[in-house]
Length: 272
Length: 73
Ligand SMILES: Cc1ncc(C[n+]2csc(CCOP(=O)(O)OP(=O)(O)O)c2C)c(N)n1
Ligand code: SF4
Picture 1 (spheres, rainbow over the protein chains, first blue to last red):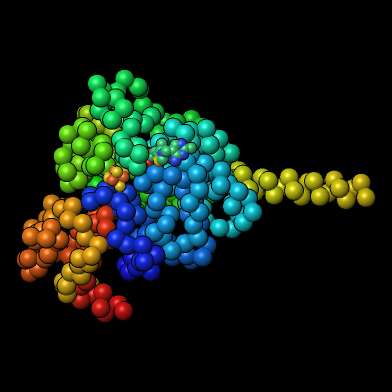
Picture 2 (cartoon, helix red, strand yellow; picture 1 turned 180 degrees about the vertical axis):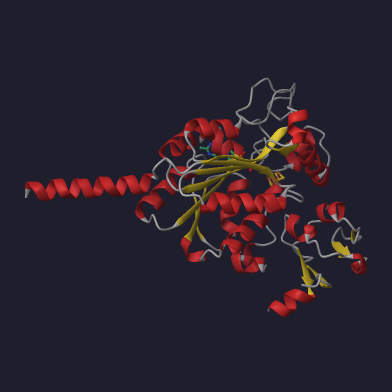
């Protein structure tokens, strides 16, 4: 694949630290778009604020770099006005589930055809390594110097409970799986959520003595297993990867909205 | 279809940040970081063209070109 077809080369080398997982997400995402044969002009990437959110500046699609936690709201606006476009919304764990948590659950509830990518590095990378709702108990961050006592959200369970019609999880170690799942998430009609565990060696890795980027990737391999695999049955403490929800029984929001427009127009005509 | 044979690793030294991910995960130990902390293919003859370096590179700095890529062009 010629990655260069899909990026704004003038902004490279990118701003991410050496070994940052967000670059691997970009790499896999470009391949997913290439393999799906999507027309760049039909793809819109909307992001908020964070190291993760900077991904929208590097892709040669339509892009909107908006405000922290609100990318899904902006994306909904774009989708409403042009439902034929493919909307991809990459977010950090803070962006998606701390400040943006409310937008996240309501976007899932409505089932608008948007692909939400949660680039989960378990920390606020951009602002100096503060804890996020995905950091995890006993982990160290700059704002929990004596370790964190906050329980985490489980992104997959949260998205499922809120009504997302496609929910998956993978890691930046599992790059072939990541591209395959991204393709499925993008093709899914309805609100799709894909959580990608992504390493932040600079903040999370350093504070938790997880080593360099290759060591953090090794750790993703060790701490996860395919859902329903023998490995996860034997080790229920591992994090499961794969597709957890893939349903087509719920109507898509823009299609429902179009029906309301038709109804309203009929009602107006009836009165004239 | 015959197995692809390596033509070359195209390495973008301006983009490579020397994170070492490609070096660590190459199953054939083809890659090394040089004194500038940039990746070089030191044993290209051992490359099996699995592309794991290309796919995992966070910097889009390495591309594996095989004889089949050339044919496909
Ligand atoms: C309204 C608002 N509040 C706070 C901030 C400061 N801020 C910028 S990025 C960020 C968190 C980034 O963490 P995350 O979303 O997990 O992304 P990462 O940088 O780890 O990829 C915060 C709190 C902001 N920009 N806007
Ligand atoms: S601070 Fe962390 S998330 Fe941000 S670019 Fe560096 S490694 Fe990536």
